[in-house]
Length: 383
Ligand SMILES: *Cc1c(COP(=O)(O)O)cnc(C)c1O
Image (tube, rainbow, N blue to C red; front, top):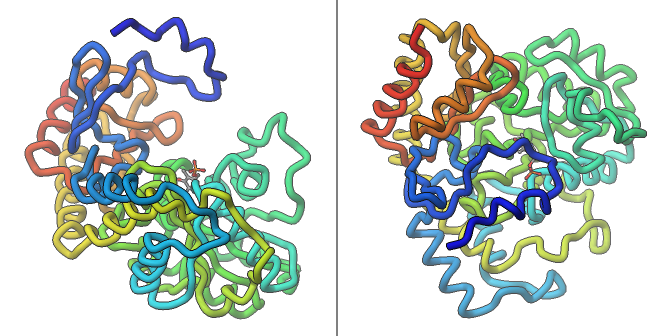
């Protein structure tokens, strides 16, 4: 096959891409166009939870491709209805709105909260990440990402993660707040898990002031932290949940789940998406939801414990944060060269900030693969 390196300048440079072209994936392994294999502890940034070309979603999507690709949301389709009822079971009530990405799921959350409460203000977290569209970007607590794109959507205040006083301050004037938007583990922001006490205080404050609480589970949901939803470990039941990354194992899909208090916000004509709930993507997502069972969640927790213990034993690792298989290791050095060196040694890993190594392997990763990754990391991080 001819090299396509010359075409790289034809892609707008929104990402600082690594110098490899990925052509194939199977389970926890991907291959580049030179035939080199890599142990994939990125999984498309917490997307390919069941592994590359997972048989269940693959078969479901292939079968659906032969039946119907698209009909539009002017009609019902079976995969979308099946997915909505599977998610309703997991969320224990409410309804779904389907879209194509995490940013879109959060846009839907912002809109439904304003509509349902009749208020406009949003409270989000410093260091949080909710996507690149203007609404989601405005709620993203990383000012560097705003530069050059203002004016942003007005009415957003930020609180410090795990700081209840700061949250109370951000809520004033409380009766104008429509939505509190939280990541259960701040992923892009450095892998910072919310403490249950903080999440519970946020839920109580939201209730007290009549705002809705949305948990952005785009990265942390779909079993990634060892429970189907990450909020299950925080002792709360949010009004809204957003999902995307892992939802269809790599096909593009986002969802907003809305509980009883919030669901009344949307009536026909209020919101929409041409491709949202696409039959092929929804069929794959059904297979993903069905595959996230007690055994898989146990694997997430067990492999997470092994990975954390192995990382902590490395002298270059200062501390470990995270839940399940969403893990951040604070290093004693800049993470960029570590990510590059790991790739050269056949291991794909991520960063989350200047000195945090982030690991988000497929949820199906086994103990031998965890050990292999740790061996490569030990070599790369040797003092
Ligand atoms: C990735 C991410 C998003 C944005 O998802 P896109 O599909 O890239 O739009 C939103 N929230 C969180 C927590 C994320 O990790």
